[in-house]
Amino acid sequence: MSNSKRGWNWAYHKARSYHVSRFQACYRATRFQLFGDTGSFVTHGGFRKSRIRS
Image (tube, rainbow, N blue to C red; front, side, top):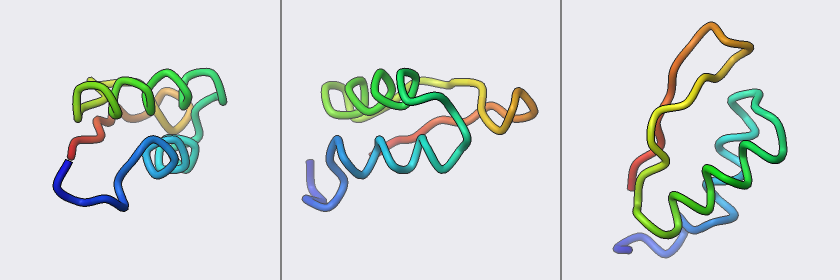
């Protein structure tokens, strides 16, 4: 990863800011750490679809 600030912790808090559960945020942060991409997931109470990429 080129930017050291964007690790598991950053991705977890970013996902939580999108109003997803702790479990979902943990899963997405782990995917981000491993692959550099969370994949698309439903956020904001089901009204949006988001993706976090490095």
